Amino acid sequence: MSSKTIFGHPTGLFILFFTELWERFSFYGMRAILVLYLTADTLGDNPGLGWTNAEALELYGWYGMMVYIMSIPGGLLADRWLGQKKSVLLGGLLIILGQFTLAIESITAFYTGLALIISGVGALKPNISTMVGGLYKKGDARRDAGFTIFYIGINVGAFSAPLLVGYYGEIVDWQLGFSLAGFGMILGQIVYVFGRKHLTGIGEAYSSSEENTEMMKKPLTQIEKERMIVLGLSFLIMIVFWGAYEQAGGFMNLYAKQTVDRVVFGYEIPASFLQSLHAFYVIILGIPMAGFWLMWKRRGKESSAIFKMAIGTIVMGFGFMALVGAAYEVSVLALEKASLYWLLLSYLLHVVGELSSSPVALSFITKLAPMKYASFMMGAYFAVTGLGNKVAGLVGEAAEKAGALEVFTYVTIFCLAFGLLLLVFVKKLKALSHGAEDESVLEN
Image (cartoon, rainbow, N blue to C red):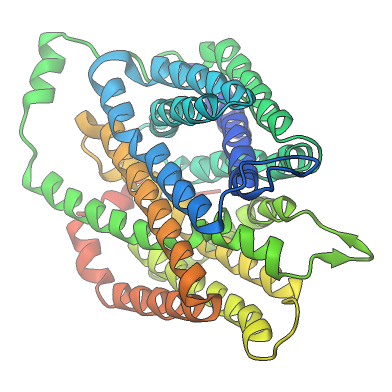
């Protein structure tokens, strides 16, 4: 691995940063226009598929689940055969093929493109995150900060994609939007291929040497087993969190288009543009939030990963409380459209919750997962993210039937109650991690 650093971090971090940035540009570009394309009128100036909201949300839920479920075989592929480095390259190529296949106006091409993207993300997503952890030695105090930098890269791509892909897809031509997402992924692959010299020794292919084989066969210790229990619980937390958060690309996307007043200074903001809000808030708040948690820890306050995830879930609940306000205006006050500021506030609170949970979870896995299961456990994390996406689709479908006010209220109550319950058990769960988090304390 190269000894060169940028801003005190390995140069390889920034190669992975830009690779993931463009992969997320591709993914969030697709996410911004998928349900809008599915529900667009078949006879309009920019015809879509003419599906009902319920049909579109059902596919969105399945797509969101499968794109992350495939991270499990993607992780196994790296752990057992290709290694993380080659798996990331393969995943990127499959995503490129998928995006350009979507640009072909054919229902067969549409489903084929989705399948290729699902397979590609499964191979790339868990392995590039595991490679970030591999850049830092055990006990390196920079690890959590490195994941925060990496997470900002994710959201630079997530911010720009809905604006560019959203505009050209929703306003100009859906197939052009899908193509732009593909070109973004090509840029990501170029960065990755030419920057691999900074990743020497990271994510290499599985070795069949006798020493490595014995390591793979060695049973887990009691400490490792208890750490796996904590990881399992953290996965459950993230299913709840992403089940709420991923309403943004599904029901909240349609809600913004159909129910929210998006006119600002005489201009109607395209619904897909609002998909950039999450990423914009992450870019603005990422460093301050990392600084806040560092200050919190240095003051001797509870700052374990489980504690942060609990707080993130509670803040998510407050975000949905803002959406209750929007639904109240339409359902109870009988206003024609809900005010945009409710959506702005909701997304802001969602991001505060996200920054307390998601990058922490990524770092947490690299600290607790046994070495021989590193990519698999990262894949499992993204798989539960996929389950969260499926939950999001089910909640969206329920909202179509039960009504937005009722569903937003239920989600608010559940997130608040679940987060508070976690706080009660933080100390017991922290004990099961056996000091794994003490090995990486953030420093300036």
